[in-house]
Amino acid sequence: MIDIEQMTVLIADDMPNMITTIRSMLKVLKYGRKFVPAENGLEAWRCLTKESDETIDLAIIDYNMPEMTGSELLTRIRSDRNLRDLPVVMVTGNANMEFVAEAAESDIDAYILKPPTMKVLQDKVWGVVENANNPSAMVRHLKKARDLEEEGNLDEAISEAQLAMKANPDSSKPVHELGYFLFQKGELKEAEKWLLKAAEMNSWDVSAFHHLGKLYLTLNQTEDAFTYFKKAMAINPRDVTRAVYFGTILLEKRMTGEAIRIFDKALSINKDDLKLKERIADICMEKGAKKHAADLLEAIAKSDPERRGLSVKLGALLEELREYSKALAHLTKAEKEEGENIDVKLRLARCYMGLGKAIRAEKPLKEVLKIEPEHEEARQLLRECA
Image (cartoon, rainbow, N blue to C red; front, side):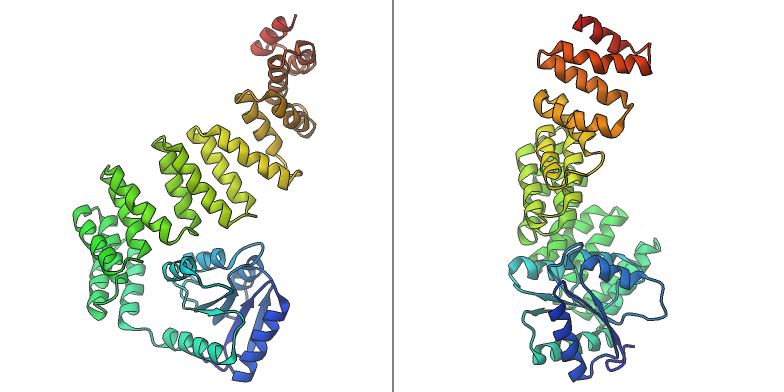
């Protein structure tokens, strides 16, 4: 049980004055005894996961933060077995359609529009704490079902989902959860029935559309799978995991243009996430979309020119694409970073030869043979230079 007057509240926002404002309002309302500030999502995550006798009872987090966004922080919270039931209030400057869909899918307990007022903060926090202390029958059954699923007891999880449906017949959530558990069990036709029912009950039920997409892929009904993935993406394009998953499938189906559009949408929402950009570039390289991979890696190199290892990867990719002039710039840098890397020296030589500069290729080739005298490709290329 959360004591609203004695609780510890995490307040995460990259604007210190907003932290101060929310803390001051909570103090006036007598909501909370201790307040833990965090200036970005990553710092907030550390506060939540550090070993301490102090337990966070409620988190109030900003949607747009550096290091880790509020959305990413919430995903981590809901994915962590020790933290997933933590009440979370999201503060946002714009509750548009996409945000509302994301809020529903990621189980935000409540959200507040900026600038917060005393009355709104009072009502939202009170409601969230009340729901945490006295969850509805549907919520209790769904939490039990989730625990049972994690234990591998799908039959009991299905029974709990059915009880949740009886507790609240108007909600699509227990319906799509039942469909999901049946899908996990391999009862595909029965899973399809309940997932379609959830989608019919609630045209905003992104989880139902997402699981239908995965189910139809399992059944090799590709067109139906794409239809439902597209619906899920249209409602909530901010889900990076779904975008990467769907884009990868499209690449595997040789639908490169569609895949790139999905990836670009995800990246437009997460403009400064270089790790995501590199992850997508790696997927594109693996699945044959090498030109797009090179474009992404070049964008990363421009944003973070000191990123180690990137010159090797980008130089090698550009050399494979026969963009020799561009490749040379990155491979020259890579050679300085990597020193005795034979692969880098060979690629440098191939670039010089591709540009008709065989004399320039001799130096890296001789260096390869100095390291490995019997290297067959280096010896062959050196003969071609002569």
